[in-house]
Length: 94
Image (cartoon, rainbow, N blue to C red; front, side, top):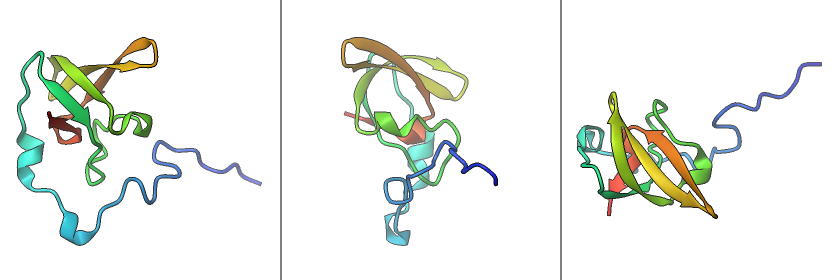
């Protein structure tokens, strides 16, 4: 027998899905953030590229820098400061 796939989006049928009337506008893909700006991580299901791990959904952090088309965001997870690299469509300014 073969093993069950444990891919990146495994078990996220409900959490990473949108109804057709909830489609996001193109402007969220073109957002620009500045260093030091506060953002919330909200994964955009229609774009798989640069999506942060689903565990960080709803976490807020600070934009530290930019890497290519993506942004480097630092969040506090428990007692640790973690660095997340995410594209702009998965971030929302506070």
